[in-house]
Length: 442
Image (cartoon, rainbow, N blue to C red; front, side, top):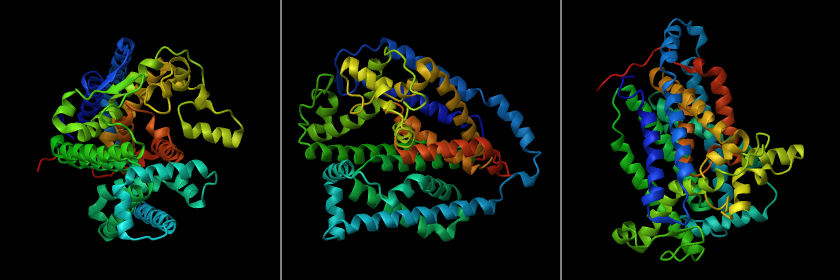
């Protein structure tokens, strides 16, 4: 790893946060009574914590690297063992996607390729139907429970294969079938956009790791197609949902904000494309307005549960706790200001602050940035699969940071995140390759 690539993820994260904050001011969404002073001060401290946390690993990593070179080969997991883990994960992920596809196709009276294309085109309607079914059905299928518990295998399969594809040639067909089925299940039967975003982040993460191993990262090559994908797919989904819910795309507003149809985005792209682009911009920048509603809410500890819908629901289901989400800072901010905590975003921080306070959330970001830095360096310099998996997962956190605490939202995501964090904490050194990767230009 050379000096050009060692801090690439940090630069990317900081620029992304700064750009999303800027978009909340100059973007096509106009916010009413936007009191941003405290928000800007808080976000400045957050960025400082992220930078110092990331850079704090430099000296300790060099010392650990010297110790690492003298480790016995018995200390490390064998390459064949790591390959076996990825192969097993691909088979598990493929089995789940096949079962999901069969389950959905059985629920359609006249299943055909034409039905799949029709559902994709009308993805907003499919999203509405899937939400209605979820609300009406209280019973969780056995398949859904298994996917919740073992959903982490899908990430291991995707990231693991992309990193080690040269060693897993025989599993190429299984991987791509899994990927295609996953996209069909999401687009044709669920109507959700999160998994597409996750997949794009996994590909970007692996691309960064592989190019850093060569000592050369040109983000413009990969960022342009990913941005086109994000704005294209997400924008199309938002337009479809707007049509399903009869939203007036020319005059979309409420008592807190409005989509400004006089903005240059609408003038350049017209009402439909303008609405689609504005929806995506609102997704990644609107949370800062919500953050201003939460910053002055008094702290009330939620016992480590208020940051996560999943943890709160588990505690209520199995231990008889009250729903701690109602005591979270965003929920109590809604009671005070009226800003809908579960409808619009407030960034990740009010959720974390529900258990750690806002100053505590700044310290939390220092720790996360430190882990993120170690994962990046071990992924590139030691070809460490476990660090690559956690690096990819944390990139999801960074991407959704302006919106919500994404990694701890659903049960599947929460369990996968906690599993990877715990396994990484205890065993990440064992997944490092004895052949240390040093940046080399090609």
